[in-house]
Image (cartoon, rainbow, N blue to C red; front, side):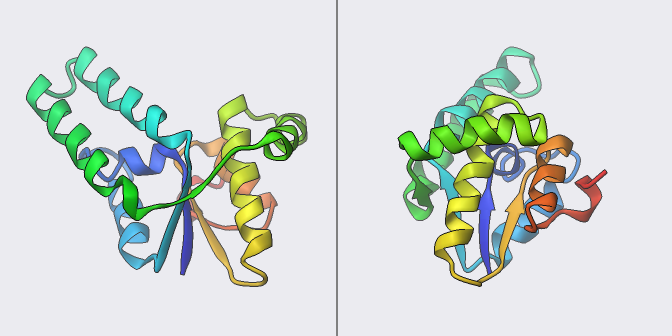
Length: 146
């Protein structure tokens, strides 16, 4: 299975929180894991925020940061370009999305187009983005579709 992971899904690999098992199961089942290059700073920001909000220790934040750096080369990346960002702008209005969420959806749509019929699982934990992905005919986390 090909899977596209947005940053909310990747963060769940590192912290014990709601839906972490769903994210980790898709990670383990995926033959190929894709994400956008923008996920790296988004996930790092989430790690920093977890430490700042005292949801983890500084040492734990540093540990998960090092682990992300270690596994990052194992992803296949969708690299934003002018066409992708233009498409993202259209998706903002089509699905009422935030900017980076639209960029993730546009990235996954490009991946789906290039996968030529192979089903792509879209793993995210933002309900609005997950619903938009479902409307775009991705396999998604059923629990997040409402």
